[in-house]
Structure formats: structure tokens, C-alpha cells
Amino acid sequence: MKKLLRITLMIMMALFSFSACNSTNPSGGNHTLPENDTPAAVSNVLIAYFSCTGTTKGVAEHIEAKTGGTLYEIVPQIPYTEADLDYYSGGRADKEQADSTARPKISGGVENMEKYNVVFLGYPIWHGQAPKIIYTFLESYDFSGKTIIPFCTSHSSGIGSSATNLHSLAEGATWLDGRRFSSGTSQSAVDEWVDSLGLKVAPDVSVFDLGSGENGHAPTVTLNSGYEMPILGLGTYSLTGETCKASVKAALESGVRLIDTAHMYGNEREIGEAIRESNVPREEIFVITKIYPGEQYSHPEEAIQESLDKLNIGYIDMMLLHHPGANDVKAYKAMEKAVADGKIRSLGLSNWYIEEIDDFISQVDIRPALVQNEIHPYYQEQAVVPYMHNLGIVVQAWYPFGGRGHTGELLSDETIVKIAEAHNVTAAQVILRWHLQRGVVAIPGSSDPAHILENISVFDFSLSNEEMNEIAALDRNEKHDWY
Image 1 (tube, rainbow, N blue to C red):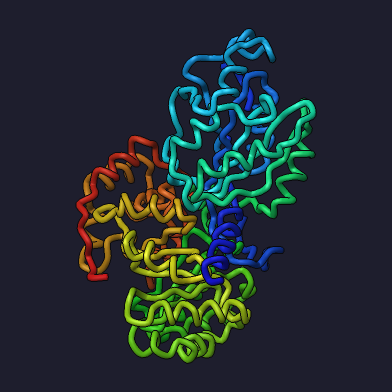
Image 2 (image 1 turned 180 degrees about the horizontal axis):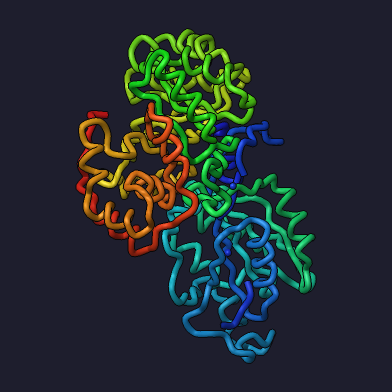
């Protein structure tokens, strides 16, 4: 039963959002609960199709338009001629369909198949079945854990056994019922079918709509929980007492709408007071807090309630586990219950990496919406960031400027200074823009209102690919804290 539940959840997660037979040749401040409040992970979608006359290609393009998925045409190494396709002539197609061992070779292949969780698979019906090149395709990759949604095109034949006969070629996959389409199928007909599958479109978490931002107003990214989170905020580590309150108020006045805190920072109460005393509506502000290993992981219900009481802002937008530790799964499951109770809206992790995330998500029901790690130009996590993105998990950088004792060195780095001078901006603004263009949310900390305003003012310039590569070359794999 537990395995069945996990498979069901995995399918639901895979179908939350999208990023595949026939051819010869993010706005801010919206934190309302989505219509479907079932937690789900953003997944990449592939629309793979084989086509010879253009019919299936048209349907595949309609699916692409609806889902925003990636199209991949299955191209035969030896193209089919008109004579090859002449039914009952003894031609190539007839012979292949009659031969159970036929596997026509494919030209090229899918890049990074591992990143796709959902595969729409399209083909025409040949003699009541899928063309044998579809068999070749399915036998070329590992589809374990993926969801396959077949679709076919024909004048009259239904999808029938053409799909079920393919199931054994991808036994580790979850197959959904397919659909037949005819020539000239409209976009609206395809849209209706996709809607019937319960799919919800959401943006790729690895790319931010930076063009919609403006200085003093950061764009948002849609989390796999369905909520929107600003991509630039204020980190409050080391801010305490009245200094913390003043910093949060200055941030809110400057247009910052993302505030990060934690139980261990000792400032949740002050942050709650600053939010309540501000003129900014609560629903426009996204607050992240964290519970800490040890006593809080052992008694997570009390820890969650303590944060709710100290913040006193009605609900918590996102709660994280501060870092791996004993009882972390137990604590996360208590957070899952708090989500069900409406006390918390989204969940995440801090200081989790590839090995830890793979082990962790197999033990919980709600996939983390965010992972918050140390990331800066000298420690870029070039493998971890895309790995999390492919899981539908937003990545957030603490220590975006390198951390205490290292900020000065990073802000005076000659490469960063040169790029800053070219754009007539500060080194700090260049670093923040670099994070955002990598698809990494940043939460710089500051108690200086001028610096806070500077940090939220990075939407009137952009870095070229060459400049991004220059900063990428600064990576030293140099971690500045122990987490």
C-alpha cells in the first residue's frame, strides 16, 4: 500500500508542470492557494514523436504549445520513402510490422533523458500497431520512474493494443491511457485531452523571468507547491533586536518581499513585529524560517508551533530543515502535517546535497520546494544546482557574497570589478545578477538601508554569456562554512 501511495504521488508530482509522429525531415506577490493544492514536483516533459506525413507532428506541436515541453522527433537513420509506406505492397513498412524482431535504427538521440519525468510518445498506426521504430526508441533508454503518455494518429483505428503492447519495453515506467487523434486535430481538442490528464503548467524552476522585474520589485518563481516566491530577498542571519526590525522594515520599504530567518538566528519575534508594523499587506510577503537539529527535530510539533508563535503572522510561507541530522525525516513529516493543517504553505531543506537529497525524498511524501545552500562565485555548486533544478526544486543561495570574512575579497575580485565597471553598477549587484541568471534565488544580508536598496536594484542591466562564463571560471570549490 505504501509503495502504491508513493507511485501515485510520484505520478502526481511528475504531472504538475512541463518543460515530443510525423515529419519527413513568473509576476510577484501572488500567494493564493492553487486550485489543486496537492503538493507536486515540477518535472520536465519530453514530447517524442515519429512521423512520416506530418499528422502526428501536428499533434505533438499542439502538446508542446499546451505544456511548454521539449519536442524530440524520432528520425529513422534510413528515411521512409513513399514506396516504403505503400500498404499491402510488400514494402519496407509491411515487412517491418510483420517481423517481431525488426528494430529500425534511429538517427541521433535524446540529450539528457534522465531529466525528463514525463514522456508523451506519439506515432501513426501501422497495421493496427505502433511502428517498430517506436520499439527501438523504448529499448534505447531507461524509463524507470518515468510516466509515459502515448498518443497516436490514424484515420480510424483506435490506440488499442498498439500502446499496451509497448508496456513490456519500458516495464519500470508508469503508463497512462493513450488517445487517438485524426488528421487536422485542433489545438483546442488537444488542450481538452491534456486538461483531462490533470496536468498543470508551471515554469521551469531553473529559469527566471528577469524581464518582468524592475528595481525595487523582484519577479517570482513558481514553486512545486504552487505558490510564488520572490527570487531576491533579505537574509537575516546575524541581525538581532532593533537592528533586525529596522533592517526588515527598510527592506520592505525598498520593495523586498522575501525574508529569510531561522530559529537559530534568534530573531523570529522581531521579524514578525516588523512585518506587522509595516504598511505591506501580509499576503505580499514571503517568509522562510527553519527548525534546527537536536531538540527541535526530536519534538518537531513544538518547534513548529514555537516559530508560528514568535513570528505571529498567521502562517509560515516556507519552513526548512536547517541541515541533515537525527530525526530529520520525523521532523519533516511533522512539517507535512502542518502543511495539511494550513500552518505552513511550502517545505524545503537547507544544506542538502545530491547524495542527501536522493536518500531523503524517498522517505517523505511532499517533495521539497527549495534547497538553500552556500553558493557564491568561489563555491558555485555547478553539479548540485542543475541536479536540484531537474528535480523541480528551487535553489537558494545563502552567503551569496561569500560570507563573513570573505565578502571583501569577493567584492574586490578583479574579474567582478571589471564587469561592474562595464555596466556602471557595483560588484555586489553583478554577483546578485549572476546568481539570478543562473536560476539561483539570493538572500543577501544587510543592516544598511542603502545596501538593501542596492541589492534589490539589479533589474536594469544583464550579464552577457561571456561575462557569465568569466564568473563561472572563478569557481574554486571553496566552501566558507561547515554545513
